[in-house]
Amino acid sequence: MDLAMLSTIPKAWFGIGAALLGVLIWLLWFIFHNPYSYPYYFVDIDISKRRNVNIQEEIEKYLLDKGMDEFLNQFNYVEQWESDTFEAAKKSIFRFKRVKQYLDILDDDNMFIFNLCRDQTRYRQRNYVKSSYVVSAASDTCECNLAYLQARYDELERIGFETTTVKYHAKNQRQLMTPELRRRIMERDNYTCQVCGKYMPDEVGLHIDHIIPVSRGGKTVESNLQVLCSKCNGHKSNRV
Ligand SMILES: [Zn+2]
Image (cartoon, rainbow, N blue to C red; front, side, top):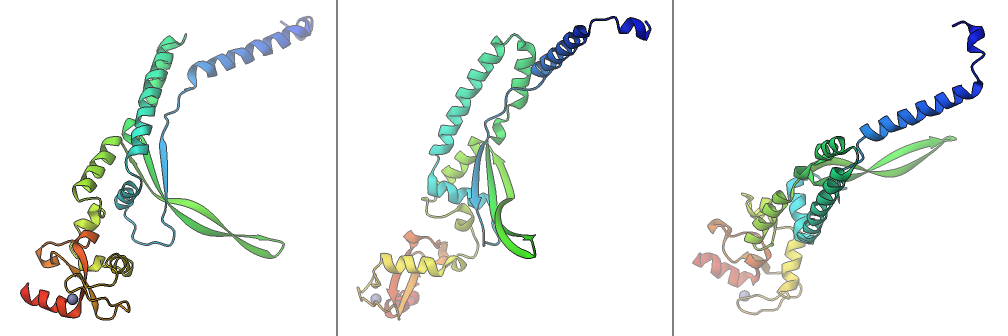
């Protein structure tokens, strides 16, 4: 076919050809692109201005604070979503492709994604003026399933929800006595010796005592701590 012949083909045919090609490309895209995406659940934990952060312990702190409800609810939601999506895939006119695509995106072992986020200060310069702005960046990530969270939660329950398992099993229990914990115990016991009842609001001469001594496996948790005056604390040490 020479150019003269080509020019005799009505122009409209090129338009129709282009439209058909477009439809074909769209159809291929429609069939082959995966329409499903797994409903991951993200939890961002802010660890700005903190050092030596352990992600497992941060997850435990989150569980101590919020419990399992949101994760159980999300799990139920995902189960429902999975059965609905699978049914829809089986009914699709491209069912063989769709069922495979659905199975491809399933990722139940990584259903929950915890991000440890840290604020980072960044700078921009414009017209010789430098200004700062803060962005939140994930510094560590942990993906897990419901069984993992439930196991951690059960472990926390076993130790009475008083602290994280990391702290509970820590070798140096005395190191866990923070000024903040000391304050909480002082306030709880109203600055009063729990043996003789002496009230000392200025705190001088009051001690925080481990009811079961650390040397005998006692933990630095609120239920094992009490306020004692020097005298009673001394007597106790002599006895033990
Ligand atoms: Zn006393």
